[in-house]
Length: 491
Image (cartoon, rainbow, N blue to C red; front, side):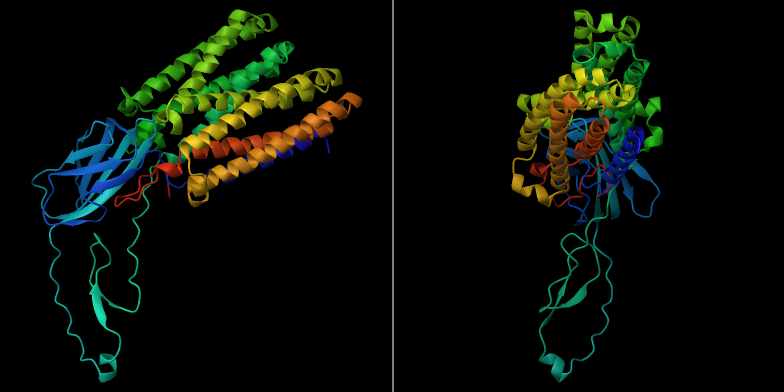
């Protein structure tokens, strides 16, 4: 089998792995959660409350927030106006119309957390006493039944409206029904966009680093230039879609509304919009740097001015990623760990892509003999930094390691860590090949191609699992709640 065919099959396996990760159950897609509400989910109230209070595990940004109230059986949807009720921005109050009347109501809300992630949920409640119903006459108990176990009447559960039922005291009561799943339509598209964003950034930043530190002569290769341009376009598209999808979700719309200017205006003025705008500006600098590289080639990439411009552009984009997400509210140390982690991933993965897509297909043994040791040493440093920073991030976001298997976030994280372990083993085998076999026989490139392909497969799986983890709730933020679960996708 030819090396190209081997690499092609590995790419197919990688794509299947991505699909497996992306279509896996996306539990609890949000960062901050709704941890309490007054009234609670399904509560029956004697009178219309003056307001509804929603308590969250993180700070809220109400700019562009959408909150509606609908009466059951009525097509009318009333828009409500939430406001922050506490100085820590974690409690939101919503005034209700005094003339609401009796009936069954559902309040649906879409908020943007201060970490830039979209949240949504619903709180159904009832106002007024249930209609009285005549109880059927109970048949006379036989002497045998009279000696049986005592019987009692219970409801379906606290806060849940339903008919009275008879249960044997000896039998445990039936559990209260779980709240139905609440789905935000843009959840799955956001996961796909995150994969595109991470992959594009890795190729763009890591590829530029590879050309700067390992293979300056590679700037003459048209394939290398095309890879960088496509990565820049992919990152720009992902940034635009991230902005649009978040705005569409905040408006309660679908992915089809993501590029509607009137919809995108929903997030104007938020911290999220400022960070994304800064990211777009840094990508614009990347466009300038890449144009200079295309025209100047090796002379440009060796220039200190070009390296400084490219460093500001790439570093700025990665900083904007560190300013949003799980670690954005965990302090400077957590943000620094995210930044170092992203740099390590980009340098290693981007260089690996350039090695597999540009260097090895040239099949020049002397070139491979020269470049591979350079990249091997660089990749080892990058992966080491990535692992250390990843450990710091895990300890900051999920300090109770023993709780990881009990949550969707934790299980996905353990899967990712398992693949990282396999990746380190594959990388070590590639280093052994580089140091021993390649020096003796530079013409045998097929084992090297296989090792690089395995690393790429593992990298894609890790990348896709990272995109899923970016939207899940860490175990440390999970708190028992009497309210509807806050979700960004399907639970």
